[in-house]
Image 1 (spheres, rainbow, N blue to C red):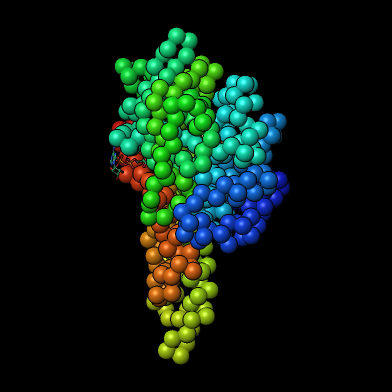
Image 2 (cartoon, rainbow, N blue to C red):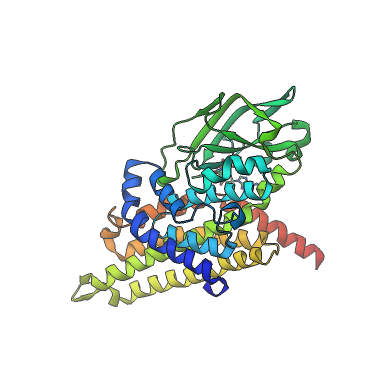
Length: 383
Ligand SMILES: Cc1cc2nc3c(=O)[nH]c(=O)nc-3n(C[C@H](O)[C@H](O)[C@H](O)COP(=O)(O)OP(=O)(O)OC[C@H]3O[C@@H](n4cnc5c(N)ncnc54)[C@H](O)[C@@H]3O)c2cc1C
């Protein structure tokens, strides 16, 4: 995969690898134990140029390609997927503003986002609607020359710390998805209430939670994507998001495999290293095969996006497969380590919780199957 990268992209991947080793890995267990979203580490990531990865250089970002971004996220996720996904969400909003924002919106948001002085969030999901994102009930109602936003958003990454919210709200329920617009709203505005972050199985560094909007005022100048374009915009960015989730799962699985290889080479039982038991060797050989396949699917989707080709199907395959094998095979890595693998001093349990989380992010595994099966019958009807 790295053959596709430019010299500058390779340098950024190397920077990410060092940051993962020196900052993320040593602190990830403590973040989880404290159930905290590490704002300081996001600032450190910004100092290394990891907060504007898809923003063009003329706007202050790094302007790297999709494959390079996935490689960065794979490296970081080997240390902590929750922290990494927080960075992905922030980067994606910065790119969205760079690509679709007005000059005023770019000036208002990008400098602070690139330095991580302000953190971004993507507010589409609602607790009642879930996967049926087009059915959101949050309303944006016209008030003279402005808007008032009312409703509730749930399962929002970065909710614990986010400052700049991209809020998807319905302007005209009769229009269905066509009526949805995307507003840029500061979390400090009147009428915005940040809810307590959720207590979940793992991945607290992502700061997942919700927001309530009670007549929050907005203007036309806050519209990032107008009706007709907003929902399509959200869906078009989802292919990149899905393959990033796939790459992140590859990072965690590689970390799990490395951990199991190291442990079994040094653990002795019945007079030999446990790595000499063929049953364990084959278990880890299967991990390596699934990891290889997951990486090929993820980077095939990334390559298609870099080439400007349609990657919807490829990203769905990649995300479904990588999240499935990450959860199952991290369990196998843990098994080869006996009870030791179950201890919190090893990262396997933390990675397994994140692999489960990955099965929901940016569309559940079942929604990936909806995408894949729709294409199967489309192709069959053409044959
Ligand atoms: C940690 C975390 C972070 C998240 N971050 C964000 C974020 O930043 N912004 C955001 O907007 N959202 C975010 N989400 C929301 C995520 O995208 C949703 O969880 C997801 O869309 C599914 O909604 P739901 O969990 O309510 O499941 P539901 O829609 O209630 O689904 C329940 C079950 O039914 C299945 N199902 C639903 N529809 C179909 C169908 N058509 N065919 C077959 N099966 C179906 C699902 O796969 C699932 O198994 C996050 C979620 C999590 C867990």
